[in-house]
Image (cartoon, rainbow, N blue to C red):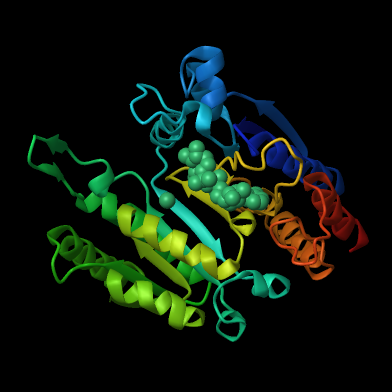
Amino acid sequence: MQANIVVLPGDGIGPEVTAAALSVLRTVARRYGHEFAFHEHDIGGIAIDKHGDPLPAATLAACQKADAVLLGAVGGPKWSDPNARIRPEQGLLALRKGLGLFANLRPVRPHPAALNASPIKPHLLTGVDIMVVRELTGGIYFGDKTRSADSASDLCSYSVDEIERVVRSAFRLARQRRGYLVSVDKANVLETSRLWRDVTARIGRDEFADVRLEHVLVDAMAMHLLSKPREYDVIVTENMFGDILTDEASMLAGSLGLLPSASLGDGKIGVYEPIHGSAPDIAGKGIANPYATILSCAMLLRHSLGLYDEADCIERAVDGALNAHAFTADLSSSGQHLSTDAAAQAVIEQMQAH
Ligand code: NAI
Ligand code: MG
């Protein structure tokens, strides 16, 4: 297959981890006989420096024409003045909006070899395999905001359409996995949550009767994620609850450097990126963990290109590399660790060995 992939390295460790991940994608292309064309464009801080815009028009246009987008990370101390008029993160928000991406998928699968890196007891983590689907473009983050000298407000609103489309994606994923979906809300106090619950229940009843649906309140879910994470399969929730729960869930896997993500809409195009940021404290040292970005490439192959065997091949190779203790500094307790490039090379060697 021929595919046109836009690469947005961004800031900090973004260029390091995307370069490492591209070496893995090139190996996949050679092995399976695909032609992937990679086109690099600027986003975030570097785009502000070079073009005065965190999402230059040329970047968005290239992404709109692409089959998929691989992103590193944006931001850093150079652009972090809270009063600045333009900030790197605006580039990300504008990109999601420009591509119509409303569902953020974050798989959490603690790796057996990395269990000790998590603050949670290892026996609770064995076998955990969760997919969180977070609504990405609605809710309180996007509602009208007001501020006066002695009060402030943020409006939280959701339309039936906005709920339906993300909940349907979650049901479809649940159907491909264990057939179990948990919808998280705060329906005991929030009207938006009551609408969320009604819409989700209706879609479950009318379109996905084969999927078991459960509704859980967000405060209880925060607790269950730590006390019985193994019980969950697909979790769907609104924007702010998803933001908080996914950061919490990331701790199950030990290191931020292991967790990929996909942002999807109605079409095939998606933005794939590690969940971590630009890690300015380690940028330029060649020690960043590339696995989250490599695993994001597996999601890209699966969700945007429909290349399931190729995606499995990457995931198996990362498993193999971790089993062989190919650890970067964030995972290693022995003091011995691999560079970013050496970790990617370990993944490539696993692919070639099997
Ligand atoms: P961060 O995720 O960049 O770093 C948090 C900690 O984890 C740091 O100690 C870092 O060294 C470590 N870390 C992160 N990724 C790693 C990797 N691949 N390998 C090894 N260690 C890793 O979050 P932080 O420090 O809060 O934010 C730094 C900048 O990144 C800020 O400007 C923030 O706005 C931006 N950011 C961007 C995101 C994005 O592009 N999607 C997401 C989160 C933050
Ligand atoms: Mg967050």
